[in-house]
Structures are given as structure tokens and as C-alpha cells.
Image (cartoon, rainbow over all chains, first blue to last red; front, side):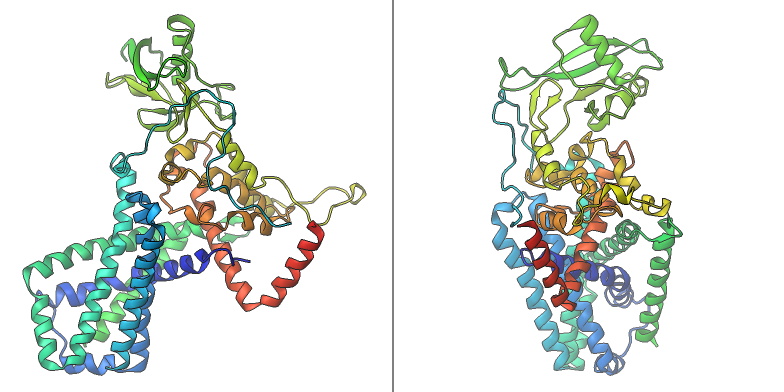
Amino acid sequence: MAKSSSEPILWTLFSAGGVLAALLVPVHLFLFAVAIPLGWLRAPSYEHLMALAVLWPVRIYLFLLCLLPLFHWAHRFRYTLYDGLQVKHLNEVIFTLCYGGAVAGTLLAGYLLWSL
Amino acid sequence: MPEKPLNKTPVYTEFHPRWYRPHVSVYWWLGQWQYLKFILREISSVFVAWFIVLMLLQLRALRGGLQTYARFSHWLQSPVVIAINVISLFFVIFHSITWFNLAPRAMAVRYRGKRLPEIMISAPNYAMWVVVSVGVAWLVLR
Amino acid sequence: MPDTIIVEIPRYSPERDTEPHFQRYEVPVYKEWVVLDALNYIKDKVDGSLTYRWSCRMGICGSCGMMVNGEPKLSCATFLSTYARNGAGVRVEPLRYFPVIRDLVTELSDFLAKLKKVKPWLMREDERQLSQGEFLQTPEQLEEYKQFSMCINCTLCYAACPVVGLDPVFVGPAAIALAQRYNKDSRDQGAEERLAVLEHPEGIWGCTFVGECTRVCPKHVDPAGAIQQYKLTAALDWVKSFVMPLGRKNKDIDHAGKAA
């Protein structure tokens, strides 16, 4: 039915990524990139973070936190390039770079999490 | 009978006087405040992607051992990185707020025939945002 | 309130001009006058060559859409006094993102072609006999699509939507909202056929939810909401086609058989 277009799945990934990003990215970014480096909050020890990260539920959580928001970015950025820069004629290139980038990031995340 | 696809070019009448066709500028998004807000909202996705990059770097540092992670934490404290991340934080929160405010429009939830007011869909989203954030913070900081 | 206001209008005559040139008219201001009254005053008393569309002058026919100080508005529903207050004058231009035939008149044939493409009429797979009586519809069923049925085809939403401007093939807010109006109608059975037409990058997926269309709509149709709901339906439909592929296939064969 939707064979003619890959848009439904890409939009679904975009939406799921958007929800996850909206709910989780602010707190993660605030903690690790702002509050802890600036010393507002006591830094968690390396041991504590490793102990958390090796747990399989946490690994799956972190994997999804990479996968879905990356596809959210890919979809949104692709359309921003079409609209904002009017470069629709570079269609194929943009499509490949955006979703390819998302796939690459996801594979890297999977590798890093697997080999923790 | 197979459905004819949407036209690849606009379809206009054959017989017409010479039209004036104004060109849409590449800077169309600067023409109106609403357009600019829209583009900023879309740009927020770049900062979400930046966060993923940070997280991948963090995972790589964790894998590398105590020393590597200490170097990574130190790098996070450099002024340029802090500045980028503070700006990212603003954009990422902007994404959350615009997302939760717009989500109800995509869902026509009806109760007894009447459409639920939008706040009844966005409020639980905001509540979940707070709960989840507190949960993650507790897990990380305890 | 000042006595007069300067109205600036781009004049374009296809026989003479290659580009519009602005012309300024001084128009009296009355508190009950709308922009359309100003245009009629100009045409009656000042310059009879001014060309523009209007009809009902009460916001229901959708003919008089124009850009008033850069905002898409119905000229019959926009008070002149709003612009007279700060003494700056008012600029009236043809609706954005459409070709201009003359002065304030835009070319709408492409919009009408897009509208026709989405099949905005009730489609039935099984024709109902007259003897079976009328279709019955509860108030709740009416609520599902009533908002989208308020569209007067004024194309203000097309003038507001940047995607329409950037991609001339994009079907556009009003057409998709009207497709939804029929999709959601309990009497209609054509949702699948419409989705087959619209599930393309130039259909519903071209929309990036800027939301301007909803903001400018004089009839509060909320085309942006209609399109996002449509995307959700299409996505769920796609998921279903994975989970129940056989069920779908049979339906397609039946439908194709009947259509052929």
C-alpha cells in the first residue's frame, strides 16, 4: 500500500525520536554537559557510571536514545535543507547524507554499547 | 485502474496572458517572525544531534577507562564547549516545549463526541517530562 | 481617526508590463469600512482600471483573498481603521505564491487541479439504493469532520504556507484538509483511494507543520491539524499493512477488480 513511498516509516521514526528527544535529552544534556562540568552538581564517579552503563536495560535505553533522536534529526534536517536552502535538486545527496549519517551514528552507538 | 500520481509540474490553463511570477527568495524565512520561529524550531534538531555526538564521545571515554574518562570530563569543562552546550540546552528545551505544544494537534482525541482541549494532552506530556527527568537525575547522581 | 489613508497597490498589466509598479491612492476612512470598501472606492471614483476579485463581501465566498501589509487576509473581513491608526498607510498585494494575472487577481487553476486530484466528494464502494433511505449521521459523527468542511477555498493558507512557495507541486493545506473532510465523513468509503493519491512527498509528507495555514484561516479550519492527523493515520496504516499483510492484499484485489 505504502510501497511507493518510504515516508511513513521515516515520519514514524521522526515522531518517535521527537518524543524521546523532548522527554530525555534536556535532562541528559543539563546533567552531563552543563551542571556537572560547571560544578553545580557533584560529579558521579567513573565506577558508578560504568556500573549503570553495563546493565542491559540501560544499554538498550541508551541505544534507543541514540537511534531515535538521530533519525528525528535526519528527517527534520533533510526538510530544512529542502525548504531553507531550496536545494531540492540535491535530493538524493541530502537523503543519503542525512539518513546515512543517522545509520552510521546508530551503528557506532551499538558498537560502543556492545563492547562496554 | 492504477492511480495517476500527483503531477510533477504545476498544472495551469493553456490559454493565459503573461503572468507575473514573483520569485521566492532564499531568505524567505527572514520575512516573517513566524517563519523565523519555525526555522529555529527545525534547527533545534541539529542540537539534538550534537547531544548524540556528545553521548557517543562519553560512551567512548567510558570504554577507555578512568584516565580517558577524566580527560573527557576535563574537556567538557573548557569554556568553548560549555558555551556550545549551554546554547544547545536552550535549543533542546525549545524543542521540548514546541513539541509538547504541537503534539495535541496531531491527535484528535474525542470524549463523548467533543474534542478534548489541547491542554489535556500537553499537560500529561509536560508532567511525564518532569517525572522522567527527575528519575534520570536520581539514577545518575545517587 | 484620521480622515484618509494611503493605499498602496502593485499595478500589473500583462499587455504593458513585465513587472508590477506600486501606485498610491488616497482613500477616506470610515470606521465601518473594510479594505474591500477602499478598493471599491478606488475603482468607482479614482481609477476604474484597478482589477480585483470580490463577491459576497461577507467572508463566505472566498473570492477576495489578498495580502494586506504582508498578511493574507480576506479584504472584506479586514477593517481599514486598523491600519489608519498609526498613519502609516496600508499595502494591498495579490496573494503570495500564486502567479499574478493582473493587479490583484491571481491564477488559481493549479490550485483547482490539486483540489480535484484529492477527490473532494463522497465516494462509495457500494452504491446505496434510494429505497434504502438517507444516510443517518449522529452529531458525534458530524463533529469528526465538521471543522474541515468550513473551508471556503479562499487560498489564504496557500499564501501563508512556505512549502507552497518553495515547492509548486505541493498539494497544499486546503486540498489536504478537504480530503480529510471526506475521509472523516462516516458516509464516505474513499479514504484508501485518497491516501493513494496523497501519500507522496508532494502530498501529506511535504508538510513540515509550519502552522501558518491554521493561523491565517478565516474559517478556523485548522488545516495543519488535519494534515498531522492524516500523517498519523497514514503511518498507522503502514504499520497495519505490516502486521496484517494478507488482510490488506485481499482488499486491494477486490477494489482493483471493481474499479476495472
